[in-house]
Image (cartoon, rainbow, N blue to C red; front, top):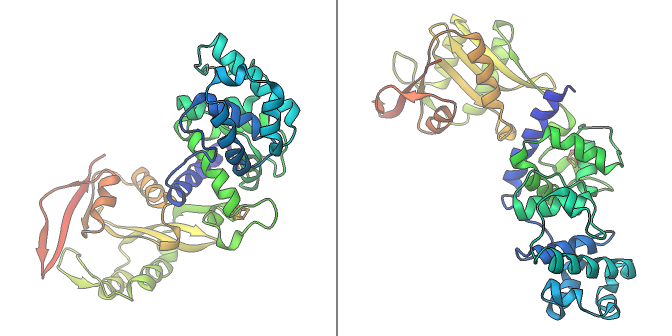
Length: 355
Ligand code: SF4
C-alpha cells in the first residue's frame, strides 16, 4: 500500500469507529483532572484500566490533590496501589510526579512533550494521553491496542512491537484532529472485536476494509448488466418509482430501458471484483443511478465514486433527487435548481453540481 492508500484506509477506519463508538472517552476515569490522569496513566502500565479505576477511587479519596500525594508517606501510597503491580516503583514515581506538578508547575500539567517526559515514570505513551485528552492536541497513544490493530490493518508490519515507530507512522497517517479520539476508540474496539487472541473477524465492523481493498473505477458498458443487476437486486424489493425526464416509472422499467439504450457510463465500487456500489451517468450529464450496498455504507464510497466521476466529466452534472437522496447530494456539493417537484404524486428535487 502506498502512503496515500494507507491514509485513505485509516480515514475509513476513523469513520466506521466513530459510528461504532460515538463517544470517544478515555477508559481511565480521571474526571477532567490533569493530576488524576497523570497518576492513573502511570499506574496503568501493565495493569488493566478497570483495576486502575478501582484502586484510584481510594487513592484520590485519601490524596485528592497533587500536594497531598506529594507530601504523603510512601508506605501509605504503596499499600493502596499494590493491586496495580510494580507498586514500589509506581508509588515512588507518582509521589515524585505529584511533587513536580504541585511545587514546580503550580498544579498545571505542562502541555509540551519534552517537559512531560521529565516527570518520573512518564513516557511518550502517557505524555500523548495527557496532551490529547487535556489539551486536545494531536497525539497517538501507541498502547498495545493501537499497535496490534494498526498492524493488522496493514499500516505497518503486523506484529510491530516498537511504540515509537508506531507513533511516528500513525501520526503521519491519521488526520491530526482525529488522533486522540481514534486511540480511545481503538481501545474499545480492541476489547470488543480485535482482541489479541482470537479476534472476532466475522462480526467485525472493519472486516471489509481490513481484509480486502475496495476498488473504485470506471466500469463502462462491459459491466452494464452487472451494474444494473446490482441496482435491481436491492430495489426489486421495493418497486421504487423514479424520475427519468419523461415522468415517473418503476425502477424495473428504467433499468430495462437503460439496458437497451446503453446510453450510460457506470462508475463502480468493487469488492473482491463484485460490484457493490454504482454511479451511473447518462450522456446528457444526468445521474441516473447512485447506489451503495447497505453493508458498505459509512466507508466514504459515495464520495470516492463522485470524485472519480467529477474528474472525468466536463460541465455541470444534474440529478433528480428523491427525498432520501437530497442530503447525500447536498453533502457532495449539489444545489437545488428549483423547488421540489411533484410528478404523479412522487416528490423529487432537481439538483445541479457546478464545477
Ligand atoms: S477483521 Fe479481524 S483482524 Fe481485522 S480489524 Fe477486524 S477483528 Fe481485527
